[in-house]
Length: 439
Image (cartoon, rainbow, N blue to C red; front, side):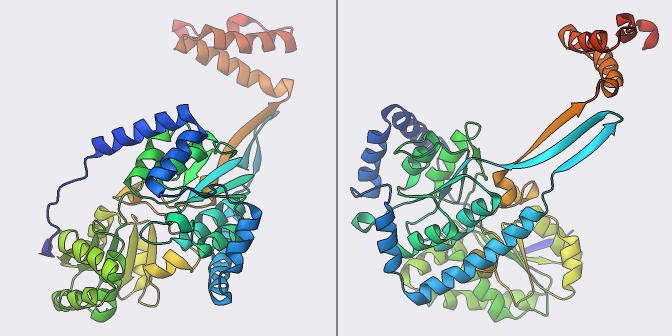
């Protein structure tokens, strides 16, 4: 497989993860020891917020009343699409019952977790869509209590539209907290919140590290890094659309990689020529992010064939993968590693990010090689059960005793023996012994 880099990412200093880890470890320890007071201290220090942290019903109603009807209609549209897709996912999870051997029945149940914490970023951008994605999915899964947590914007608190979205989608509690303090409050059950069983949602490097450190004590959706996007385009693609899509994802942040993989050199050159002007036309904060991402993180890769393009994409395992090429069914069947796939120019990553129905909380940094994105499945536990008749238990008990003794686990073997002795008076314990001759 031949790859030619028409543009290659620069080497950039990496974030000192050990420093971030130590900061987050210290904060988590201080919050767990100091409780509510420590959370509120951090809120004043980092959120610059001294208002009510847990929103009352009256505050939620007031915020919702300030949101325009047009904005409400758009959020309701997105919520309906995401709910329908999540409901279809939930329908794929079925409880089962199986008679494994005569007289021994085993089963599977799909149970939602009791409490979930949904972190919704609200710093540089107010991530209204993240509230819809996380809260809606948890609600459809049947989670008992859903906390939505988002950083306040100074003294103004959480954005009104974000509050409306979280409330509409089913959040039981809305909390004005950012960063590590928000994650800790949900995980430890502070401020009157129930301790959560799982933490989900995107966030900065401190949020991601807090989730990573708490994993095991609580579940998490994934440890996310900077968002990334890859576009596969052949000679049938329109350069203007490809360039716009690359820039649209580059505005996420200075360290958000975007990649173009193509077998058409003329298309690649055309796209590269268009990107700078598109970036320059963005508002300043978006422009600065996109400039840095394109300069330092973007790559344009020329391949010999569509198979090489697909193989290259699978190596990168992008969070978002767009295909603007002929024979879309072939790509759908061939591609393996991605968080979410967008086929054809008629759709784009932004659709999935905001309103089309699929979830935008997705694996980054190559994690799509082994995991998918947020879904109702993340909020569910698959648990098993079994029940047996006495007759049905006999062959299982005999096999269990023999295997246990082969492993050297005599206590396990005897739990089978006592049942055999009780249920079957003719039982001879010697029959469960494994001898050298039987091996």
